[in-house]
Image (cartoon, rainbow, N blue to C red; front, side, top):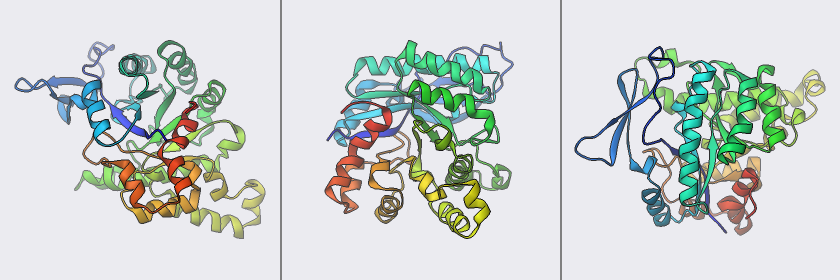
Length: 334
């Protein structure tokens, strides 16, 4: 079975010039390391945002790591902080097409090892829907990555219906990743809490919002997945389902239970603990979970196939989670 990592990020070696002519203070730029060409720093608002290295853009370096860890293929998606919803939609498209071109170039160098998940200007869902077609037609990408909220607006908001309709029509899967979680104002004393605690909570809110909107009833062929095993979604879903069981009005408005609807989504394996992954397999089903590592960032899961083997799962479940589920999500034949 081909081992496929759906949750693997990239950063281009450079960024396009700010199309606003300097009016976007958060437009990223790359600061190269004069002593080591393999290292660089992403700068945002003239401040260091993240130190990175050539694993973000160098295909040979990436393939070397993949071979060492038994990963056959990755779905490349941009570092989430590049999704650029805080710019004008036209400017976000400039960044998105630059990212798409970079991902497309990586795929061309090793097409058997890479798939592509691009980005669209979801601050304008109609433009985002149009851009999905561009990513597929002009860049050959397989799907798209979006954030758990779009500038504070929940994904289940009807505002985003044009985007989800286009994703279904174009057969473009959607990978949801944490970004700018709600409640950030509470992390002031410890900004790391936003990434460590805020992202899983925001993922749970995104899952709950899409279930409440009955997104898969409206778009039954849409394929949606969530990073980090859906974050805190599992416990939120149990609470929602218990409320649904005891509330006839909720059952009338929502013909399927929240947990049943959640089993229509996909989730990655990036939960670090075997017991937690076994719980997710029991909750959602082995056919709804695939490998995710967060490569190449420090919080990543190293050697994901070994992690799966350590979980003590049934052989059939292992095969599906190693790669079959990921290929089905991407709409790719094994």
